[in-house]
Length: 422
Image (tube, rainbow, N blue to C red; front, top):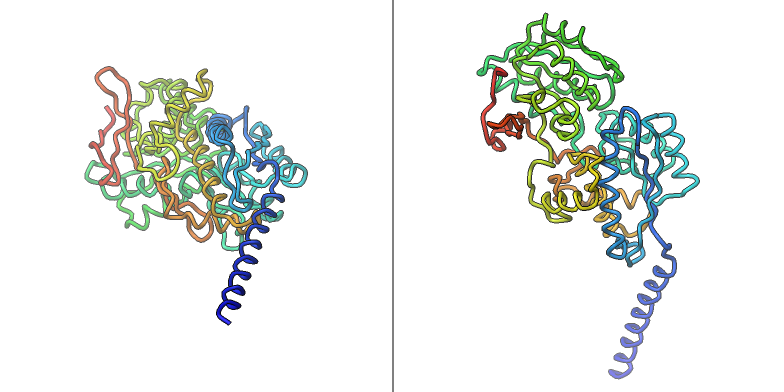
């Protein structure tokens, strides 16, 4: 009897082992020749300056993975090479909409990645939702993208615009009055990215008890390229601090107009002197950026990582790969690479290529994944709540070369604000 029981157990074990082997063999047999990642980029137009660094960062990750034999995909229990299917939307939302549909319906990509920025992401969100395709949203931070009825999106590489400006608003509310900041002017481009940031700043200032007064509040089209009249209107309001919230071309035009008219505000905040410092230096000059307040991005802070390259390693890899310097290194370079890391980690835990299973895998990383971009953390709608950027200031050294000084939150500070601007 005992011998028969042992034989029976052995038979069952053999069947289980055989079944496992068969399942593994089937997975390997069903595995495609590659994993298709579909994305868009803008090589020209208003959004090229933010799109191309993100795209190059993503491509750097893809090339690294393919050099290692591909990306491990748990659903097939093997490494698979990555095939990038990428189209140029030329900063045009109508073109982008057509191409997002093409990636899903014709190219049948496995993973869908949005172009950089909220404007070019905005058309992808409803398409991905309607097609039931999970959208890896690289840097589109608009508040309208993240809703409880849309499980097909998560933000990869920067915080949602609804929380992004909190360090700026808190600095104005809690440190500002002691510096003499009582009156604030807000000028913003009316798109999902900077429009949401403007509304968030106003909400945070109000929540803090209206310790500072908003004396100028105006939205302008994102295509605005001449700010001379607006600058004079702001000056007439006599603010102690000016917040200019726009994309890189907006910041470049605004800062150039300030220089052309010889105007200096006591405090000036702009977004892209921090996010794309090299680009702004080329187009505005270091003198025009001196003492400007901005966000301190992951391209300037060395975060501890538990996955992927650290900042120094990534900078070295970037310089070796892109030797011509045509695409500037900055936050957006980090953002594209971070998107790749999130996809890689998610594919290593997703049990199938079903789009909602991919979502589950991405959300399982929340709070656990630490990359050179900081801690990856999502709220229930897919908005990024980690990867927050401190407020800083670009301060010149004795030779006039600018460097970042972190100011707020205080636990991140490594210097004091220079106010008013010399």
